[in-house]
Image (cartoon, rainbow, N blue to C red; front, side, top):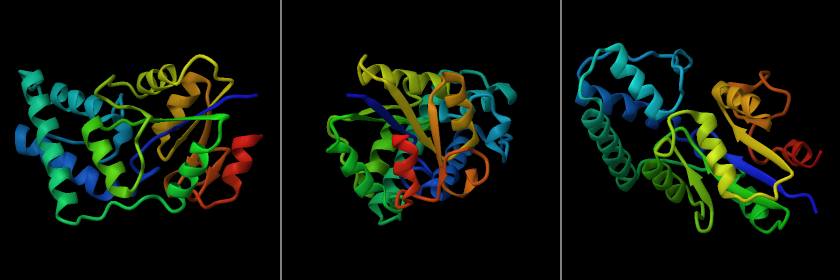
Length: 215
């Protein structure tokens, strides 16, 4: 039996959260640090995770006492996300994602994990709000490392040793870069990666997704 580890990014991949997530992150940073410069293009950052981006923002802005500011921004961002969701804010699952995930859960040849560049507390809030079951699933975030490939590696390690193939599903160019570095298979999802990777689907209802996974 061939064991496959399928590891998912979260924002823009499993949940449609990019619109409010980036807005609240920027607001939390500026609420605490003032009118610091934040690059519009996340590709301008060396480590495209909330922790990596925040540390670079503070370095570029010569911010002192990084640890205290970091924790304040992390906490403020979490409060914003929670308040948004509790007020009825929209955080929908990617089309077909819930059913696809349930199918994987029944497959004894697949182990599932989450590896996100966001923080863990907000990742769990968004996934639960969107209807995902997090029981018995490994979830690693920028609380565990500020480099995306390191987060992904830690997630894989948690899934066990008897893995024959690793597939990462994500929606950003930084996801492609991280999987190339790790030597994993990659499936791109959503509009940002259309035409930018060999294996791509619009969403989880795309029949090509299974074909990419079993080849």
